[in-house]
Image (cartoon, rainbow, N blue to C red; front, top):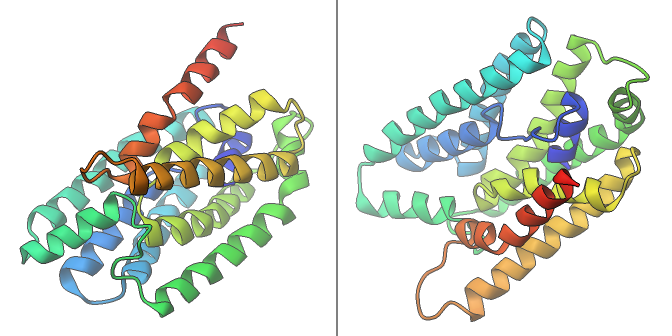
Length: 248
Protein backbone atom coordinates (compact mmCIF):
# COMPACT_ATOMS: atom_id res chain seq x y z
CA UNK A 1 0.00 0.00 0.00
CA UNK A 2 2.87 2.33 0.75
CA UNK A 3 4.43 1.52 -2.62
CA UNK A 4 1.32 2.29 -4.64
CA UNK A 5 0.86 5.54 -2.72
CA UNK A 6 4.41 6.58 -3.65
CA UNK A 7 3.78 5.78 -7.32
CA UNK A 8 0.59 7.85 -7.32
CA UNK A 9 2.22 10.68 -5.39
CA UNK A 10 5.19 10.85 -7.80
CA UNK A 11 3.20 9.82 -10.92
CA UNK A 12 6.14 7.50 -11.56
CA UNK A 13 6.39 3.71 -11.71
CA UNK A 14 9.72 3.92 -9.86
CA UNK A 15 7.99 5.32 -6.79
CA UNK A 16 9.01 3.18 -3.84
CA UNK A 17 9.00 3.54 -0.07
CA UNK A 18 12.71 2.69 -0.03
CA UNK A 19 13.61 5.41 -2.54
CA UNK A 20 13.56 8.13 0.11
CA UNK A 21 15.63 6.14 2.58
CA UNK A 22 12.68 5.11 4.77
CA UNK A 23 13.61 1.43 4.61
CA UNK A 24 17.28 2.19 5.32
CA UNK A 25 16.25 4.38 8.26
CA UNK A 26 14.16 1.56 9.72
CA UNK A 27 17.16 -0.75 9.42
CA UNK A 28 19.44 1.83 11.05
CA UNK A 29 17.04 2.23 13.96
CA UNK A 30 16.74 -1.52 14.37
CA UNK A 31 20.52 -1.90 14.33
CA UNK A 32 21.04 0.89 16.88
CA UNK A 33 18.38 -0.56 19.18
CA UNK A 34 19.75 -4.10 18.88
CA UNK A 35 23.38 -3.14 19.47
CA UNK A 36 22.79 -0.68 22.31
CA UNK A 37 19.69 -2.07 23.99
CA UNK A 38 18.48 1.49 24.66
CA UNK A 39 14.98 0.69 23.38
CA UNK A 40 13.02 -2.04 21.64
CA UNK A 41 13.70 -2.87 18.00
CA UNK A 42 10.36 -1.47 16.86
CA UNK A 43 10.70 1.81 18.73
CA UNK A 44 14.25 2.27 17.40
CA UNK A 45 13.03 1.72 13.85
CA UNK A 46 10.18 4.17 14.34
CA UNK A 47 12.38 6.93 15.74
CA UNK A 48 14.96 6.72 12.94
CA UNK A 49 12.31 6.43 10.22
CA UNK A 50 10.49 9.43 11.67
CA UNK A 51 13.72 11.45 11.66
CA UNK A 52 14.37 10.47 8.04
CA UNK A 53 10.80 11.34 7.07
CA UNK A 54 11.04 14.76 8.69
CA UNK A 55 14.12 15.51 6.57
CA UNK A 56 12.22 14.40 3.46
CA UNK A 57 9.22 16.42 4.69
CA UNK A 58 11.11 19.69 4.49
CA UNK A 59 12.95 18.74 1.28
CA UNK A 60 9.61 17.92 -0.37
CA UNK A 61 8.41 21.46 0.20
CA UNK A 62 11.51 22.91 -1.49
CA UNK A 63 12.29 20.76 -4.56
CA UNK A 64 10.54 19.22 -7.55
CA UNK A 65 9.48 15.58 -7.61
CA UNK A 66 12.32 14.64 -9.97
CA UNK A 67 14.90 16.19 -7.69
CA UNK A 68 13.24 14.61 -4.68
CA UNK A 69 13.75 11.15 -6.17
CA UNK A 70 17.44 11.90 -6.76
CA UNK A 71 17.78 13.28 -3.25
CA UNK A 72 16.00 10.25 -1.81
CA UNK A 73 18.38 7.79 -3.46
CA UNK A 74 21.43 9.71 -2.24
CA UNK A 75 19.96 10.19 1.24
CA UNK A 76 19.05 6.50 1.44
CA UNK A 77 22.65 5.57 0.58
CA UNK A 78 23.87 7.87 3.36
CA UNK A 79 21.49 6.33 5.90
CA UNK A 80 22.44 2.83 4.77
CA UNK A 81 26.12 3.66 5.29
CA UNK A 82 25.42 4.75 8.85
CA UNK A 83 23.65 1.45 9.44
CA UNK A 84 26.66 -0.44 8.11
CA UNK A 85 28.95 1.40 10.54
CA UNK A 86 26.66 0.57 13.47
CA UNK A 87 26.43 -3.11 12.53
CA UNK A 88 30.14 -3.62 11.89
CA UNK A 89 30.83 -2.28 15.38
CA UNK A 90 28.50 -4.72 17.10
CA UNK A 91 29.70 -5.38 20.66
CA UNK A 92 29.03 -9.14 20.48
CA UNK A 93 28.61 -11.79 17.81
CA UNK A 94 25.21 -12.76 19.21
CA UNK A 95 23.85 -9.25 18.65
CA UNK A 96 25.28 -9.23 15.14
CA UNK A 97 23.60 -12.56 14.38
CA UNK A 98 20.31 -11.28 15.81
CA UNK A 99 20.41 -8.26 13.54
CA UNK A 100 21.24 -10.24 10.41
CA UNK A 101 18.49 -12.76 11.09
CA UNK A 102 16.07 -9.84 11.38
CA UNK A 103 17.47 -8.29 8.20
CA UNK A 104 16.88 -11.55 6.32
CA UNK A 105 13.16 -11.13 7.11
CA UNK A 106 12.19 -11.99 10.63
CA UNK A 107 9.00 -13.96 10.12
CA UNK A 108 9.75 -16.03 13.21
CA UNK A 109 9.65 -12.81 15.24
CA UNK A 110 13.09 -13.31 16.77
CA UNK A 111 13.53 -10.80 19.60
CA UNK A 112 10.09 -9.25 19.01
CA UNK A 113 8.04 -8.61 22.15
CA UNK A 114 4.30 -8.36 22.63
CA UNK A 115 4.79 -4.63 23.15
CA UNK A 116 6.57 -4.41 19.78
CA UNK A 117 3.65 -6.09 18.04
CA UNK A 118 1.08 -3.82 19.72
CA UNK A 119 3.11 -0.75 18.80
CA UNK A 120 3.50 -1.97 15.22
CA UNK A 121 -0.22 -2.65 14.84
CA UNK A 122 -0.96 0.83 16.17
CA UNK A 123 1.32 2.36 13.52
CA UNK A 124 -0.34 0.21 10.86
CA UNK A 125 -3.81 1.36 11.93
CA UNK A 126 -2.79 5.02 11.62
CA UNK A 127 -1.17 4.41 8.22
CA UNK A 128 -4.18 2.45 6.96
CA UNK A 129 -6.62 5.17 8.04
CA UNK A 130 -4.51 7.86 6.37
CA UNK A 131 -4.19 5.80 3.17
CA UNK A 132 -7.96 5.49 2.70
CA UNK A 133 -8.72 9.03 3.82
CA UNK A 134 -6.32 10.33 1.12
CA UNK A 135 -7.38 7.82 -1.56
CA UNK A 136 -9.61 10.17 -3.58
CA UNK A 137 -7.06 12.95 -3.43
CA UNK A 138 -4.22 10.69 -4.60
CA UNK A 139 -6.29 9.24 -7.45
CA UNK A 140 -7.20 12.70 -8.68
CA UNK A 141 -3.58 13.83 -8.39
CA UNK A 142 -2.35 10.79 -10.34
CA UNK A 143 -4.80 11.50 -13.18
CA UNK A 144 -3.55 15.08 -13.35
CA UNK A 145 -6.95 16.51 -12.41
CA UNK A 146 -5.53 18.22 -9.34
CA UNK A 147 -2.09 18.94 -7.95
CA UNK A 148 -1.24 18.13 -4.36
CA UNK A 149 0.70 20.99 -2.86
CA UNK A 150 4.17 20.35 -1.37
CA UNK A 151 2.86 20.49 2.20
CA UNK A 152 0.20 17.92 1.32
CA UNK A 153 2.79 15.65 -0.27
CA UNK A 154 4.96 15.93 2.82
CA UNK A 155 2.04 14.98 5.07
CA UNK A 156 1.26 11.95 2.90
CA UNK A 157 4.91 10.91 3.22
CA UNK A 158 4.50 11.00 6.99
CA UNK A 159 1.49 8.71 6.73
CA UNK A 160 3.35 6.30 4.44
CA UNK A 161 6.13 6.22 7.03
CA UNK A 162 3.73 4.66 9.53
CA UNK A 163 2.98 1.80 7.12
CA UNK A 164 6.67 1.27 6.34
CA UNK A 165 7.73 1.21 9.96
CA UNK A 166 4.89 -1.06 11.06
CA UNK A 167 6.09 -3.76 8.64
CA UNK A 168 9.86 -3.34 8.45
CA UNK A 169 10.44 -2.96 12.17
CA UNK A 170 8.85 -6.36 12.84
CA UNK A 171 9.85 -8.55 9.92
CA UNK A 172 12.83 -6.80 8.34
CA UNK A 173 13.22 -5.18 4.90
CA UNK A 174 11.11 -6.77 2.16
CA UNK A 175 11.76 -4.23 -0.57
CA UNK A 176 10.47 -5.99 -3.71
CA UNK A 177 6.91 -5.97 -2.38
CA UNK A 178 6.70 -2.18 -2.33
CA UNK A 179 8.07 -1.72 -5.87
CA UNK A 180 7.30 -4.76 -8.00
CA UNK A 181 3.85 -5.63 -6.68
CA UNK A 182 2.28 -2.16 -7.22
CA UNK A 183 3.63 -2.11 -10.78
CA UNK A 184 2.15 -5.53 -11.48
CA UNK A 185 -1.13 -4.42 -9.92
CA UNK A 186 -1.29 -1.48 -12.33
CA UNK A 187 -0.66 -3.82 -15.27
CA UNK A 188 -3.45 -6.16 -14.23
CA UNK A 189 -5.94 -3.41 -13.43
CA UNK A 190 -6.01 -0.26 -15.54
CA UNK A 191 -8.24 1.58 -13.11
CA UNK A 192 -6.74 4.76 -11.67
CA UNK A 193 -8.77 4.42 -8.47
CA UNK A 194 -6.03 3.79 -5.92
CA UNK A 195 -8.44 1.96 -3.60
CA UNK A 196 -8.63 -0.91 -6.09
CA UNK A 197 -4.87 -1.09 -6.15
CA UNK A 198 -4.78 -1.10 -2.36
CA UNK A 199 -6.78 -4.33 -2.48
CA UNK A 200 -4.94 -5.93 -5.42
CA UNK A 201 -1.46 -5.00 -4.19
CA UNK A 202 -2.23 -6.17 -0.67
CA UNK A 203 -3.52 -9.56 -1.84
CA UNK A 204 -0.60 -10.05 -4.23
CA UNK A 205 1.94 -8.94 -1.64
CA UNK A 206 0.56 -11.28 1.02
CA UNK A 207 0.45 -14.12 -1.53
CA UNK A 208 4.06 -13.56 -2.59
CA UNK A 209 5.26 -13.46 1.00
CA UNK A 210 3.29 -16.59 1.89
CA UNK A 211 4.72 -18.54 -1.08
CA UNK A 212 8.21 -17.37 -0.15
CA UNK A 213 7.73 -18.44 3.45
CA UNK A 214 6.54 -21.91 2.40
CA UNK A 215 9.55 -22.33 0.09
CA UNK A 216 11.94 -21.28 2.85
CA UNK A 217 10.35 -23.60 5.38
CA UNK A 218 9.74 -26.72 3.27
CA UNK A 219 11.82 -26.50 0.05
CA UNK A 220 15.10 -25.21 1.45
CA UNK A 221 17.43 -28.02 0.25
CA UNK A 222 18.89 -28.24 3.73
CA UNK A 223 20.31 -24.70 3.75
CA UNK A 224 19.19 -21.45 5.36
CA UNK A 225 17.34 -19.31 2.85
CA UNK A 226 16.80 -15.67 3.85
CA UNK A 227 13.22 -14.74 3.10
CA UNK A 228 14.07 -11.36 1.60
CA UNK A 229 16.58 -12.86 -0.85
CA UNK A 230 14.38 -15.85 -1.69
CA UNK A 231 11.42 -13.60 -2.40
CA UNK A 232 13.45 -11.57 -4.87
CA UNK A 233 14.49 -14.76 -6.70
CA UNK A 234 10.92 -16.05 -6.86
CA UNK A 235 9.74 -12.65 -8.06
CA UNK A 236 12.01 -12.60 -11.12
CA UNK A 237 9.18 -13.86 -13.37
CA UNK A 238 7.03 -10.99 -12.12
CA UNK A 239 9.79 -8.54 -13.01
CA UNK A 240 10.00 -10.07 -16.49
CA UNK A 241 6.27 -9.53 -16.96
CA UNK A 242 6.61 -5.89 -15.95
CA UNK A 243 9.39 -5.20 -18.44
CA UNK A 244 7.80 -7.15 -21.30
CA UNK A 245 4.44 -5.45 -20.82
CA UNK A 246 6.15 -2.10 -20.57
CA UNK A 247 7.60 -2.53 -24.07
CA UNK A 248 4.30 -3.43 -25.71
